[in-house]
Length: 330
Image (cartoon, one colour):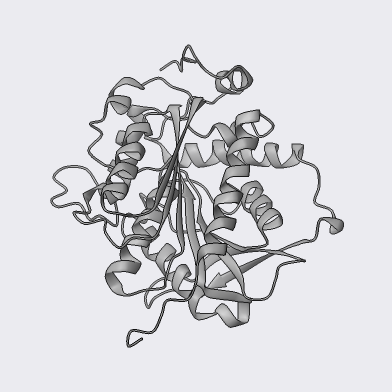
C-alpha cells in the first residue's frame, strides 16, 4: 500500500506527512522495532536535557493487582512544582500493540515543565500478547496508585487528570468511565488527543482514509483484531471501546482533539458531541490540514506548537477550577 499525502494538508506538515513510514500493524513485532528506531532517532535529534531545565524524571514500578506484573511508569517532576499540585496520568498511543515510555516522553516533559503538574506516563501491557483488559487494567491501577499516594507524590487527589493520544485516548476515556462506575478516584479532566473511540469502523472518515499518513483504515482493523480478538466478539466492553458506553453522564470534563485527515476524526467528534449531550463540559478542537500524530511527526510546526499550548492551557484551567466536592451531608 502506498500512503498518499492528501490535498489540503497544512504546508508545514506536508514534508513530515510524506516521510511517514508505511507500517503494517498486522505484524506487531515489526511495528515495534520500526517505531523504536524512529523514537531513538527523534530523541537523538532533540537537545540534550539540561540540569538547568528544572525537570526531574524518575522511572518507577507501580504495584499492580494480584496476578499482574508491576507497571513501569515515568514520573516528570518540575523543580518549581507547587505543593499539592495537579497531576496528569498519561497513556501513550500505538494501536494498543506498540509504544513505551519513550513514545510520549517529549510531550510529557513539556507539559510538566509548562504547567507545574506532576506527570505520570504509563507503560501498560500490549496486545496481542496481552489483549484487553490487561492494558486497561494497568492504566486504571496507576490512576488509583496516584490517588492513593497523593501525599507522598505531593499531589492534590482532587486535581488528577487523565490523558492519552490515539489508543491512549481510548484508555483515558475508558479509565474515566471506570472511575465513575466503580467509585474510583475523582478525575478533573480527560484529555483525549486524536483518540480511538469506536471499534465499529463505520464513520465516513474511517471509510475514506485508507491510505493517509500517520494512520489508516486497514491498520484500524488490525488494531482491533489484536486488542479484542477476531471472529465474533460478542458484546464489546465500553472499557475497550468507549463509544459502546450507553450513558456518558457524570463523566469528568473533556478536551477532545481531532485532525482533519485522520480516519479516527469522526469517532472523536461524535464522542465529543455525545459528551455535550450528556451535559459533560467538553471542548472539541479539530485541527484543519493535520494528519494523525502530526504533533509527534512535526514538533516545530505552528499547528504542533498551537496544540501543545492548548493542552497546557486546558490542564491549567481545569486545575484552577477543580475544587474538593462538598461533603454529602452538607
